[in-house]
Length: 506
Image (cartoon, rainbow, N blue to C red; front, side):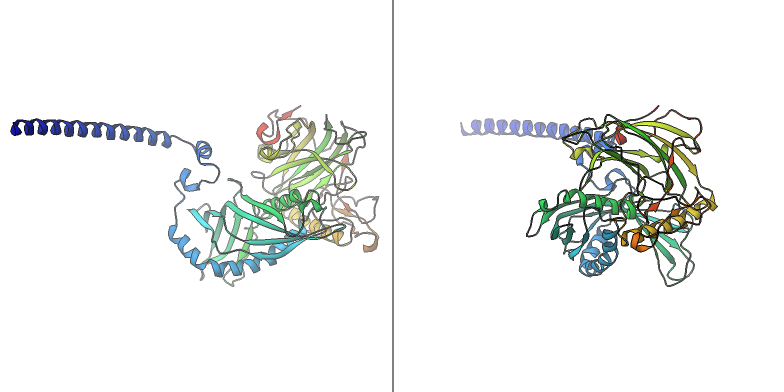
């Protein structure tokens, strides 16, 4: 009996073992098939699909295999960081504080570092791409992420308000840094280094502002002012095509070929606006338009009082430094007592403009260029502009470069004299940037520093005429149709609806 029961139990155990083994093999096979399907699907994903799955913080080597991981470099950077941080803090104070003052918004009278410490957490390099785009140069793109523990406190002062310490907390940086090494035949074999932030993917600097021993409400709109200042500094000084050129090796070298040069002139006529949003409780808004490619070279139209359908018909001439990456920004403001309120903004990409061809466009105004942060997404009206792009030859290019330097110097003098509150202020509507030998000359009129800084331009064009305030910076404004315009060419929109809310030719 015991023998029979043992045989039966053995058979049952054996059959169970075989059934379990077969089930496990089928399960593993189905898992392998499902995994293979998932891998195939992942392999078919493009960059946009990966962004949706991983968010915007995914490293570049995920979608671009040419980016190599450099774990060894991150280990060395972590060890070197205490020394690098100390040196970087001194460099940042020396180089960034003047930029804070230069790009300081009009509503703030002083902006500087009260405390600056980069903390103990080193940045992380997610990947590096090395390429040779030009003979005699090595180009390196560094995918950098930093979620450190810095202690940064800004001292902010405004009219009738004492200094308020404002701390930048939870600082995070996501960007791709382009480093270009100019090669040389002598030791150390590198004559200069060019550093810039790539515009795509767009650099991200996230932080939270907190008042130390006070309240952010003491200065209305302070958060937006600081955000705009940080964005302007990054965009206008560090983001490609703008760059920092550093000669190294102690050998005198010509870095002019590495520096950014003007490419052309953009003539912009701000014709009119329609159906602007009314910001006044009594009466209507008093709109004016601000036009610029670089924030340091803002110009603005005259103010049309009590009108939601203003007609300006004013022309400005702006320098284009890199047509492929730069944009024309148009902002419409309501003139008010104290701080003016923005009615809408639009942006046009210059890459789609054809040289020597004029276009008339009707552009939809948006509440903000970053619509994700906007709750009120109601229509802000439209603005009509004309654009005409002229590409410089070599002679015009160098003349424009010198003229830009002169204009920046004059802005600084006007600021010191109190004519303008900041070098970021838009110059009043009588004129636009005009280059010596390029677009007619620069005119400055004044009776001395006491009444405003005044200079008389010696370009090929006419000297600026009388001003409402002596010493006010003069740029040329043309009322009515521009003589540079010819018959409208292509009817292709300059920009996509995603960028500017829908620009359409008239």
